[in-house]
Length: 410
Image (cartoon, rainbow, N blue to C red; front, side, top):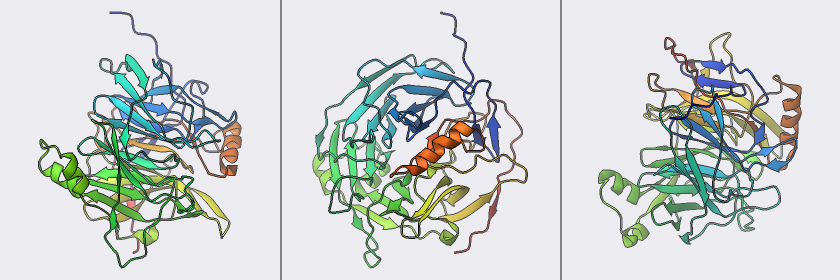
């Protein structure tokens, strides 16, 4: 067996949420470049950073960086094949077979509608992936229009759902309400047309910069920006076919049954919503235990009021009671700070439970250069955020108590 190459320490800040925030120290701050609008996904023991843009150079990244879930080591992945054009505000989604699907995004001049696949070959134990190859799958069906700022997730049955985003469609002023489904096995796109369940309520409209996570067979979408105004709506999208496949996982829907499946969209009337600040480009993840979802940061904006404020709060959504709570950090604890358009991932921490890792932008208090980069990001017509990766500390420690929720008034 060949001798393992020495690993380099990863650029801070790296933090994990395991009852309280903590930072992972780093020895060299020049190892990972700052970037905006990247996507981060967890594959095995590693977190992959895909794409993004260096704010000081306005160049989109084509490289894929690999960060160990502990936040202690980094590795630049050598990918075979033709890498996609550098982009930001795209989605990267993990599907079966160690594959990552990258869809859409923008290079600052145009919007993309292409789909790219990164096939990974995982190494042993804590070793980085030993192989990676880019390919461009041929798709059929109702191919989505080019877009950016959409949100995507892998649903039960190995089907990718993509919702919303900004397109060049004049009918919706660019803000899409479309829900697309990609059958990963056949690479066939299908435009779902969900009916609004609460028909007596105001119509649900398109948005960009929403965050999402999957709970059982439901695709939950939070927040976003509509015509320059942030919202705090929580939407639930579901399909009768997903419910049927969950009841009988071994059965596979025929094309005719898939076409006949009904999909719905509705507002979730979660308790405590009045305490939740409207925002777009927040980071969201479901906890490993599956009982909670967490929302961090984001940007509160209202074009008519001239409001544009970066947030740094941490919200908890109880998925059993659908109740919001604002988590208050322990006195004197180190928190990630104000940031938006960053990543929030649930990782398998083995001995730990309910551990969440974030890939976050640096705040202006950390370095003057990154303060300038953040100012540049805020000045963009479509706001983005600086992002780097952070992850849980590798050193086991006694499990602290969760931050005390501040009671949220309905």
